[in-house]
Length: 178
Length: 423
Image (cartoon, chains in turn red, brown):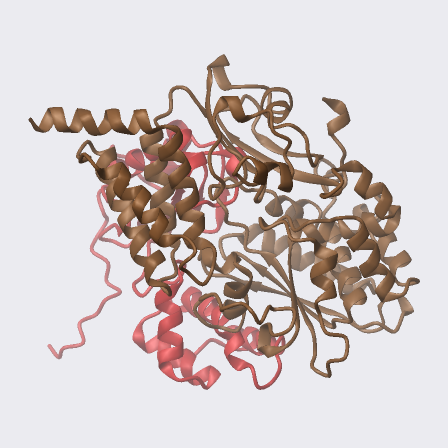
């Protein structure tokens, strides 16, 4: 397992932001790169990051498990992150969460069996005056309604009332010999 | 109402393409910097101290005083950390500065670093701010190309590099020492103070941590003078503030107003009053950590000291307005869910206490509240507050206590209903 040439270059640039003897400071940005490239921060990825920055693996593991944006298992290709903090919930965020949960056939914190969709409840996303809001992957959507969500779901291929996963995800290959 | 509106930090929010350097320059960007580079660094610090610019991240500490704590005779490098980890519920102003007027922040950063003798600044932006981060990175690039950053800025001989650094989704990293730990690539566990970051901060070097909005006032203070700024606000809290208004109002938004503007004016005039002309039930005045106010308390002036007098706080000036249809039982459930999720786990009273608060608030919300639950929660609040390294524990306890004290009857009713159903 190794980083792509593009990621390797990005890591080099980030490391230049810090004094030579402070290599750990690059850890969080590097973990963001790694998660983007490998979909999840599995033990193997943690090891790669530890080697790259010359850190003990425990320094990597404790950071991965501490931060909400780091995932040890893959999230959905389309990752719905609905804010359910006070300002959004006062304007119906919990209903929108229930609506998405019903349409996608998963609960908050789950991923569909094919790995296409995931649904997370989020704490404040910092767009309270445009509540209710959510992130879909890296894009912010404001002033949400069920109608808006329905249109988005249709565009993403959720035609039926409840999403039926296309096939089971195949990313997890059994390590046992056949 | 109009005399409350003064646009300093928000002056370019409605100007198309103001995030581009060319437009920003037409609007007067970097004029404050040109003036600052002709001044003595100590005079800049003195000017900012005189302006009574207070920290807009929540604590309200005078910015110029904070800068004065940085030792002058050190041979260590000094750092500026810009706190763009905006995540206090109800607060959505730093996002606008980053994406609508990033050059204003860059200018504030350069002046501040010149004043204190800093050559490296890190802008710690919360990980969920993907778009604001992209815009701000572009602005750094443009500013560097134009000679406002990098070596020998505008021929002054002063060097400064500015880097953005992403967070990864933890509220605690908005606490200044949690931010420093996170920037160093660790869990965002706050440090015991003292020593304060001004003496021992990032990489064990003197460090100033300032909020995005705070630094964005610096260019206009230098350009127009401390007296001008001070006169806009109150005698102890100069200038303006960006008020994020959300919840049940007709016109939610981010409004720049003089500090000290009455809360009633903000809700009823600036934000247009309560949605569907319903009755006001409660207001969270300064982000969710600020103790809640009832309708008879909204004639207060929105500045740090007036808010402290009524035992609440201006905090981050995130105002969440709640109308008569909302249930305080729900609001407390959402509130305690947040602090339970965000407690970093370092101090036992906060880690366990926020979990307990959430469990009790959730059972009341689902109709399984027990007699004595309210006193249990008040007791928990007393056992969390002032027993932790950082203020997160207090930030959970203070609003919980205020909500129970001010809306006790509503919670009692929910608990009695539960008892009746069980019987």
